[in-house]
Length: 163
Length: 163
DNA sequence: CTACCTATTGTTATATTATATCATACTAGT
DNA sequence: ACTAGTATGATATAATATAACAATAGGTAG
Ligand SMILES: [Zn+2]
Ligand SMILES: [Zn+2]
Ligand SMILES: [Zn+2]
Ligand SMILES: [Zn+2]
Image (cartoon, rainbow over the protein chains, first blue to last red):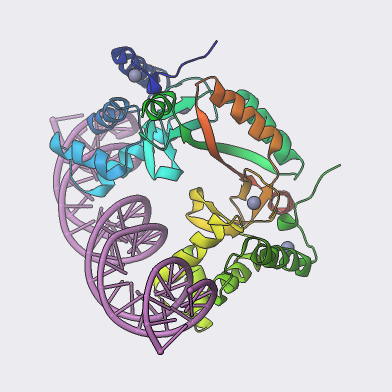
Protein backbone atom coordinates (compact mmCIF):
# COMPACT_ATOMS: atom_id res chain seq x y z
CA UNK A 1 0.00 0.00 0.00
CA UNK A 2 1.15 3.43 -0.91
CA UNK A 3 1.88 5.79 1.94
CA UNK A 4 0.61 8.94 0.26
CA UNK A 5 2.42 11.97 1.49
CA UNK A 6 0.17 14.77 2.73
CA UNK A 7 2.29 17.26 0.88
CA UNK A 8 1.25 15.76 -2.43
CA UNK A 9 -2.47 15.32 -1.73
CA UNK A 10 -5.48 17.01 -0.24
CA UNK A 11 -5.63 16.42 3.45
CA UNK A 12 -6.78 17.95 6.67
CA UNK A 13 -4.03 20.42 7.08
CA UNK A 14 -5.19 21.57 10.50
CA UNK A 15 -3.91 18.26 11.75
CA UNK A 16 -0.43 18.94 10.35
CA UNK A 17 -0.39 22.35 11.95
CA UNK A 18 -1.62 21.07 15.26
CA UNK A 19 0.87 18.20 15.38
CA UNK A 20 3.85 20.38 14.60
CA UNK A 21 2.92 23.12 17.05
CA UNK A 22 2.04 20.56 19.68
CA UNK A 23 5.45 18.96 19.38
CA UNK A 24 7.09 22.34 19.70
CA UNK A 25 5.17 23.04 22.91
CA UNK A 26 6.36 19.70 24.22
CA UNK A 27 9.96 20.71 23.64
CA UNK A 28 9.28 23.86 25.62
CA UNK A 29 8.15 21.82 28.61
CA UNK A 30 10.59 18.96 28.21
CA UNK A 31 13.81 20.68 27.13
CA UNK A 32 13.07 24.22 28.18
CA UNK A 33 13.57 25.65 24.69
CA UNK A 34 12.32 29.18 24.34
CA UNK A 35 9.67 29.35 21.67
CA UNK A 36 9.46 33.12 21.49
CA UNK A 37 6.85 34.92 19.37
CA UNK A 38 9.10 35.29 16.29
CA UNK A 39 10.18 31.70 16.48
CA UNK A 40 6.69 30.40 16.95
CA UNK A 41 5.34 32.52 14.14
CA UNK A 42 8.17 31.37 11.87
CA UNK A 43 7.25 27.76 12.52
CA UNK A 44 3.61 28.54 11.82
CA UNK A 45 4.56 30.20 8.55
CA UNK A 46 6.60 27.20 7.46
CA UNK A 47 3.96 24.66 8.37
CA UNK A 48 1.28 26.68 6.67
CA UNK A 49 2.74 25.56 3.35
CA UNK A 50 3.86 22.12 2.34
CA UNK A 51 6.79 23.45 0.50
CA UNK A 52 10.18 24.95 1.10
CA UNK A 53 10.25 28.68 1.71
CA UNK A 54 13.18 30.99 1.21
CA UNK A 55 14.39 33.04 4.15
CA UNK A 56 13.31 36.27 2.49
CA UNK A 57 9.84 34.96 1.86
CA UNK A 58 9.55 34.06 5.53
CA UNK A 59 10.95 37.46 6.40
CA UNK A 60 8.27 39.25 4.39
CA UNK A 61 5.57 37.45 6.32
CA UNK A 62 7.20 38.12 9.64
CA UNK A 63 7.50 41.79 8.79
CA UNK A 64 3.84 41.86 7.78
CA UNK A 65 3.05 40.51 11.23
CA UNK A 66 4.93 43.33 12.90
CA UNK A 67 8.26 41.66 13.55
CA UNK A 68 11.58 43.03 12.34
CA UNK A 69 12.08 43.30 8.62
CA UNK A 70 15.79 42.67 8.30
CA UNK A 71 17.36 39.38 7.15
CA UNK A 72 18.84 38.34 10.51
CA UNK A 73 15.36 38.21 12.00
CA UNK A 74 14.36 35.41 9.65
CA UNK A 75 17.72 33.66 9.54
CA UNK A 76 17.99 33.52 13.31
CA UNK A 77 14.53 32.12 13.81
CA UNK A 78 15.07 29.57 11.05
CA UNK A 79 18.42 28.54 12.45
CA UNK A 80 16.84 28.04 15.84
CA UNK A 81 14.13 25.80 14.42
CA UNK A 82 16.65 23.76 12.46
CA UNK A 83 18.88 23.35 15.50
CA UNK A 84 16.01 21.98 17.51
CA UNK A 85 14.76 19.66 14.82
CA UNK A 86 11.58 21.62 14.14
CA UNK A 87 12.57 22.52 10.62
CA UNK A 88 15.01 21.44 7.95
CA UNK A 89 17.14 23.31 5.54
CA UNK A 90 16.89 22.20 1.92
CA UNK A 91 20.18 23.16 0.35
CA UNK A 92 19.14 22.48 -3.18
CA UNK A 93 16.53 25.21 -2.90
CA UNK A 94 18.24 27.53 -0.43
CA UNK A 95 15.06 27.13 1.52
CA UNK A 96 13.49 25.81 4.68
CA UNK A 97 10.58 23.54 5.54
CA UNK A 98 8.89 22.57 8.79
CA UNK A 99 9.83 19.09 9.94
CA UNK A 100 6.90 16.77 9.35
CA UNK A 101 8.26 13.98 11.52
CA UNK A 102 9.19 15.92 14.61
CA UNK A 103 10.34 13.92 17.56
CA UNK A 104 11.31 10.87 15.58
CA UNK A 105 15.09 10.99 15.26
CA UNK A 106 15.65 10.93 11.54
CA UNK A 107 17.85 11.82 8.64
CA UNK A 108 15.49 13.71 6.42
CA UNK A 109 14.86 12.51 2.89
CA UNK A 110 13.20 15.17 0.76
CA UNK A 111 11.14 14.52 -2.31
CA UNK A 112 11.16 17.76 -4.24
CA UNK A 113 8.69 18.15 -7.09
CA UNK A 114 10.29 20.14 -9.86
CA UNK A 115 6.93 21.07 -11.30
CA UNK A 116 5.05 22.42 -8.28
CA UNK A 117 7.85 22.89 -5.75
CA UNK A 118 6.05 20.81 -3.13
CA UNK A 119 8.40 19.11 -0.73
CA UNK A 120 7.55 15.88 1.06
CA UNK A 121 9.64 14.53 3.85
CA UNK A 122 9.90 10.76 3.83
CA UNK A 123 11.26 8.54 6.57
CA UNK A 124 14.65 7.28 5.50
CA UNK A 125 15.76 4.56 7.87
CA UNK A 126 16.71 1.98 5.21
CA UNK A 127 18.44 4.70 3.23
CA UNK A 128 20.31 5.83 6.29
CA UNK A 129 21.55 2.31 6.85
CA UNK A 130 22.82 2.06 3.28
CA UNK A 131 24.56 5.40 3.67
CA UNK A 132 26.24 4.30 6.89
CA UNK A 133 27.58 1.22 5.11
CA UNK A 134 28.91 3.21 2.17
CA UNK A 135 30.60 5.63 4.57
CA UNK A 136 32.09 2.82 6.64
CA UNK A 137 33.94 1.57 3.56
CA UNK A 138 35.79 4.86 3.54
CA UNK A 139 36.36 4.89 7.31
CA UNK A 140 34.22 7.99 7.36
CA UNK A 141 32.36 8.89 10.56
CA UNK A 142 28.86 10.05 9.67
CA UNK A 143 27.34 12.93 11.57
CA UNK A 144 24.50 14.21 9.44
CA UNK A 145 22.92 12.97 6.25
CA UNK A 146 20.91 15.04 3.86
CA UNK A 147 19.17 13.43 0.93
CA UNK A 148 17.43 15.53 -1.68
CA UNK A 149 15.52 13.78 -4.44
CA UNK A 150 14.35 15.73 -7.45
CA UNK A 151 11.50 14.46 -9.52
CA UNK A 152 7.77 14.68 -10.10
CA UNK A 153 5.04 14.28 -7.53
CA UNK A 154 1.95 12.18 -8.31
CA UNK A 155 -0.28 15.23 -8.70
CA UNK A 156 1.97 16.82 -11.32
CA UNK A 157 2.55 13.50 -13.07
CA UNK A 158 -1.25 13.22 -13.35
CA UNK A 159 -1.58 16.73 -14.74
CA UNK A 160 1.03 15.99 -17.39
CA UNK A 161 -0.88 12.92 -18.58
CA UNK A 162 -4.12 14.83 -19.00
CA UNK A 163 -2.60 17.10 -21.66
CA UNK B 1 38.23 -4.66 3.29
CA UNK B 2 38.05 -0.91 3.39
CA UNK B 3 37.88 0.88 0.07
CA UNK B 4 39.96 3.87 1.07
CA UNK B 5 38.99 6.95 -0.82
CA UNK B 6 41.83 8.74 -2.56
CA UNK B 7 40.49 12.03 -1.34
CA UNK B 8 41.20 11.02 2.26
CA UNK B 9 44.65 9.51 1.75
CA UNK B 10 47.96 10.00 0.03
CA UNK B 11 47.84 8.66 -3.45
CA UNK B 12 49.28 9.13 -6.88
CA UNK B 13 47.26 12.09 -7.88
CA UNK B 14 48.58 12.16 -11.43
CA UNK B 15 46.45 9.09 -12.01
CA UNK B 16 43.31 10.91 -10.88
CA UNK B 17 44.09 13.82 -13.13
CA UNK B 18 44.85 11.60 -16.07
CA UNK B 19 41.71 9.51 -15.66
CA UNK B 20 39.41 12.48 -15.44
CA UNK B 21 40.94 14.31 -18.38
CA UNK B 22 41.07 11.11 -20.39
CA UNK B 23 37.37 10.54 -19.84
CA UNK B 24 36.63 14.10 -20.90
CA UNK B 25 38.56 13.59 -24.14
CA UNK B 26 36.52 10.49 -24.77
CA UNK B 27 33.33 12.47 -24.50
CA UNK B 28 34.73 14.86 -27.05
CA UNK B 29 35.20 12.03 -29.52
CA UNK B 30 32.13 10.03 -28.60
CA UNK B 31 29.49 12.71 -27.99
CA UNK B 32 31.10 15.64 -29.74
CA UNK B 33 31.07 17.83 -26.64
CA UNK B 34 33.17 20.95 -27.00
CA UNK B 35 35.85 20.95 -24.37
CA UNK B 36 37.05 24.50 -24.95
CA UNK B 37 40.09 25.97 -23.20
CA UNK B 38 38.11 27.55 -20.33
CA UNK B 39 36.14 24.38 -19.78
CA UNK B 40 39.17 22.17 -19.89
CA UNK B 41 41.09 24.42 -17.55
CA UNK B 42 38.12 24.53 -15.17
CA UNK B 43 38.07 20.76 -15.04
CA UNK B 44 41.82 20.70 -14.40
CA UNK B 45 41.40 23.20 -11.57
CA UNK B 46 38.70 21.12 -9.94
CA UNK B 47 40.57 17.86 -10.23
CA UNK B 48 43.73 19.43 -8.90
CA UNK B 49 42.09 19.46 -5.48
CA UNK B 50 40.16 16.68 -3.82
CA UNK B 51 37.72 19.10 -2.37
CA UNK B 52 34.83 21.25 -3.37
CA UNK B 53 35.70 24.65 -4.75
CA UNK B 54 33.47 27.69 -4.83
CA UNK B 55 32.76 29.33 -8.17
CA UNK B 56 34.66 32.45 -7.19
CA UNK B 57 37.70 30.46 -6.19
CA UNK B 58 37.65 28.75 -9.57
CA UNK B 59 37.16 32.13 -11.19
CA UNK B 60 40.26 33.56 -9.51
CA UNK B 61 42.35 30.76 -10.93
CA UNK B 62 40.86 31.12 -14.39
CA UNK B 63 41.54 34.83 -14.32
CA UNK B 64 45.12 34.17 -13.25
CA UNK B 65 45.44 31.99 -16.33
CA UNK B 66 44.31 34.78 -18.60
CA UNK B 67 40.65 33.91 -18.96
CA UNK B 68 37.83 36.30 -18.19
CA UNK B 69 37.49 37.47 -14.61
CA UNK B 70 33.75 37.91 -14.29
CA UNK B 71 31.43 35.44 -12.53
CA UNK B 72 29.66 34.13 -15.63
CA UNK B 73 32.96 32.80 -16.94
CA UNK B 74 33.24 30.39 -14.03
CA UNK B 75 29.55 29.64 -13.66
CA UNK B 76 29.16 28.78 -17.32
CA UNK B 77 32.13 26.48 -17.42
CA UNK B 78 31.03 24.77 -14.20
CA UNK B 79 27.49 24.39 -15.44
CA UNK B 80 28.79 22.78 -18.60
CA UNK B 81 30.88 20.28 -16.67
CA UNK B 82 27.97 19.41 -14.39
CA UNK B 83 25.62 18.94 -17.34
CA UNK B 84 27.99 16.50 -18.94
CA UNK B 85 28.68 14.55 -15.78
CA UNK B 86 32.26 15.73 -15.46
CA UNK B 87 31.62 17.58 -12.22
CA UNK B 88 29.08 17.72 -9.46
CA UNK B 89 27.56 20.55 -7.56
CA UNK B 90 27.62 20.19 -3.80
CA UNK B 91 24.72 22.25 -2.56
CA UNK B 92 25.66 22.11 1.08
CA UNK B 93 28.86 23.96 0.29
CA UNK B 94 27.75 26.07 -2.65
CA UNK B 95 30.66 24.45 -4.39
CA UNK B 96 31.75 22.16 -7.15
CA UNK B 97 33.96 19.09 -7.42
CA UNK B 98 35.25 17.06 -10.34
CA UNK B 99 33.42 13.79 -10.77
CA UNK B 100 35.66 10.96 -9.64
CA UNK B 101 33.58 8.24 -11.21
CA UNK B 102 33.09 9.64 -14.66
CA UNK B 103 31.39 7.45 -17.17
CA UNK B 104 29.72 5.23 -14.61
CA UNK B 105 26.12 6.35 -14.41
CA UNK B 106 25.67 7.20 -10.78
CA UNK B 107 23.84 9.21 -8.20
CA UNK B 108 26.67 10.86 -6.36
CA UNK B 109 27.07 10.33 -2.65
CA UNK B 110 29.39 12.85 -1.08
CA UNK B 111 31.30 12.37 2.11
CA UNK B 112 32.16 15.84 3.31
CA UNK B 113 34.73 16.19 6.07
CA UNK B 114 33.76 19.07 8.31
CA UNK B 115 37.30 19.40 9.62
CA UNK B 116 39.39 19.53 6.43
CA UNK B 117 36.71 20.16 3.78
CA UNK B 118 37.86 17.18 1.73
CA UNK B 119 35.09 15.65 -0.33
CA UNK B 120 35.03 12.03 -1.36
CA UNK B 121 32.60 10.69 -3.88
CA UNK B 122 31.37 7.21 -3.07
CA UNK B 123 29.41 4.89 -5.31
CA UNK B 124 25.87 4.77 -4.07
CA UNK B 125 24.03 1.97 -5.82
CA UNK B 126 22.53 0.37 -2.71
CA UNK B 127 21.61 3.78 -1.41
CA UNK B 128 20.01 4.67 -4.67
CA UNK B 129 17.90 1.54 -4.52
CA UNK B 130 16.70 2.39 -1.02
CA UNK B 131 15.86 5.90 -2.17
CA UNK B 132 13.85 4.59 -5.11
CA UNK B 133 11.83 2.43 -2.77
CA UNK B 134 11.12 5.26 -0.35
CA UNK B 135 10.04 7.45 -3.25
CA UNK B 136 7.83 4.74 -4.73
CA UNK B 137 5.81 4.67 -1.51
CA UNK B 138 4.85 8.25 -2.24
CA UNK B 139 4.22 7.64 -5.94
CA UNK B 140 7.07 10.00 -6.59
CA UNK B 141 9.00 9.70 -9.85
CA UNK B 142 12.71 10.10 -9.15
CA UNK B 143 14.86 12.02 -11.56
CA UNK B 144 17.99 12.97 -9.68
CA UNK B 145 19.28 12.09 -6.26
CA UNK B 146 21.81 14.03 -4.30
CA UNK B 147 23.18 12.69 -1.04
CA UNK B 148 25.46 14.77 1.11
CA UNK B 149 26.95 13.23 4.22
CA UNK B 150 28.66 15.42 6.79
CA UNK B 151 31.16 13.94 9.15
CA UNK B 152 34.83 13.33 9.79
CA UNK B 153 37.30 11.72 7.42
CA UNK B 154 39.77 9.11 8.72
CA UNK B 155 42.71 11.52 8.52
CA UNK B 156 41.01 14.14 10.67
CA UNK B 157 39.65 11.52 13.08
CA UNK B 158 43.26 10.37 13.54
CA UNK B 159 44.51 13.90 14.16
CA UNK B 160 41.85 14.41 16.82
CA UNK B 161 42.92 11.28 18.70
CA UNK B 162 46.57 12.38 18.81
CA UNK B 163 45.74 15.47 20.87
C1' DC C 1 13.97 45.46 45.01
C1' DT C 2 18.16 46.05 42.52
C1' DA C 3 22.30 45.11 40.25
C1' DC C 4 24.01 41.97 37.23
C1' DC C 5 24.18 38.58 33.67
C1' DT C 6 22.56 36.29 29.61
C1' DA C 7 19.63 35.48 25.74
C1' DT C 8 17.01 37.60 22.41
C1' DT C 9 15.64 41.01 19.14
C1' DG C 10 16.34 45.12 16.21
C1' DT C 11 19.20 47.62 13.01
C1' DT C 12 22.92 48.88 9.96
C1' DA C 13 26.14 47.50 6.97
C1' DT C 14 28.41 44.29 4.12
C1' DA C 15 29.80 39.75 2.27
C1' DT C 16 28.89 35.91 -0.68
C1' DT C 17 26.74 33.51 -4.30
C1' DA C 18 24.32 33.65 -8.71
C1' DT C 19 22.03 35.37 -12.95
C1' DA C 20 20.20 38.52 -16.70
C1' DT C 21 21.62 40.95 -20.58
C1' DC C 22 23.97 42.57 -24.40
C1' DA C 23 28.14 42.90 -27.23
C1' DT C 24 31.79 40.41 -29.45
C1' DA C 25 34.17 36.48 -31.31
C1' DC C 26 34.56 32.00 -32.77
C1' DT C 27 32.78 27.37 -35.55
C1' DA C 28 30.76 24.72 -38.76
C1' DG C 29 28.08 23.97 -42.59
C1' DT C 30 26.58 25.99 -47.15
C1' DA D 1 32.47 34.58 -47.89
C1' DC D 2 27.67 34.08 -45.64
C1' DT D 3 24.99 32.58 -42.07
C1' DA D 4 23.22 30.20 -38.04
C1' DG D 5 24.49 28.48 -33.90
C1' DT D 6 27.65 28.46 -30.01
C1' DA D 7 30.76 30.37 -26.85
C1' DT D 8 33.07 34.11 -24.47
C1' DG D 9 33.67 38.75 -22.46
C1' DA D 10 31.95 42.47 -19.80
C1' DT D 11 28.50 45.25 -17.25
C1' DA D 12 25.08 45.37 -14.12
C1' DT D 13 22.19 43.59 -10.71
C1' DA D 14 19.66 40.00 -8.11
C1' DA D 15 19.33 36.71 -4.43
C1' DT D 16 21.18 34.70 -0.43
C1' DA D 17 23.65 35.12 3.97
C1' DT D 18 26.39 36.97 7.86
C1' DA D 19 29.11 40.32 10.94
C1' DA D 20 28.78 43.61 14.35
C1' DC D 21 26.73 46.50 17.59
C1' DA D 22 22.78 48.68 20.10
C1' DA D 23 18.57 48.07 22.61
C1' DT D 24 15.56 45.20 25.23
C1' DA D 25 13.61 41.50 27.90
C1' DG D 26 14.08 37.81 31.57
C1' DG D 27 16.12 35.41 35.02
C1' DT D 28 19.24 35.23 39.36
C1' DA D 29 22.15 36.46 43.38
C1' DG D 30 22.56 39.50 46.80
ZN1 LIG E 1 -0.72 19.41 5.79
ZN1 LIG F 1 12.14 16.03 9.70
ZN1 LIG G 1 43.83 12.25 -6.53
ZN1 LIG H 1 30.37 11.53 -9.99
